[in-house]
Image (cartoon, rainbow, N blue to C red; front, side, top):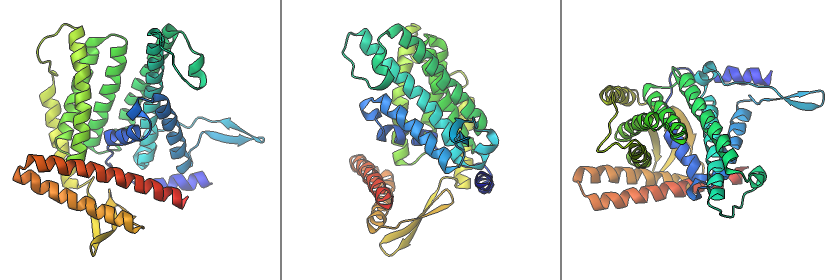
Length: 343
């Protein structure tokens, strides 16, 4: 009965919504181990995140039968994804979980092949054959690629066009990683080029901080593109065959998104601070004075950056952008602290 009521409440949200996949993934990776290449920690985080999402949706895969809990599979369908972004996030973090576990095994196999002493916890510590590990992590990369394809399939019609193109770029990246690992460099190169084009075009139309994140992803992809091109003995610049059509599609989707205002953030002032923020149509109250001051400082920095862009003062612009990133990091720590205090 409770589950039925939860699903009825989810059905109230209709229409395509905006979902920034790359920004979500970057935030999760940065905060959960990947700053130090700790793929095991990130894998565990993704598993916990999926469980928390399912619990919040009352869509867990555990059912009590005769005083014990048994596993009952509850797949995420396209209809559910259309109802709430949380269902889409379950699919996204399932893909990230498979990728992180594959990278953890690859890292362990590389250390074993190099004769290094590896400190691993759990089942990874008992695995000492790098060849068997390669077979296993290739299967995990394949699972991540398949999950990314399912993510794109079920997001079609549920998210707006710009979000869908971004998910296409994410899928192309996952396919490219798998193809590169199995030495299919030609397919990997095409997918990397597609992902690079999508992220660079979307990043050029985003705000300051988002542009930095997209540009960082593009620079990572360029490294893989050079590696694939070298393996195929290709010289000079390599380009995607249907780049013009894809660029035109991104430009069209970006215009529609800006007209609809799907990802706008509105802030209501109360004197020198802010009482609430409105993100994607959802009003979020700012309860503490420190958080209100932080949001006020953020809006002031954004206005300053816009003025510096027009004036062309590059040195001051870089300093303001770095200050913006620092302010966002401080806000994240503040929000995390307040959530712990409330719990």
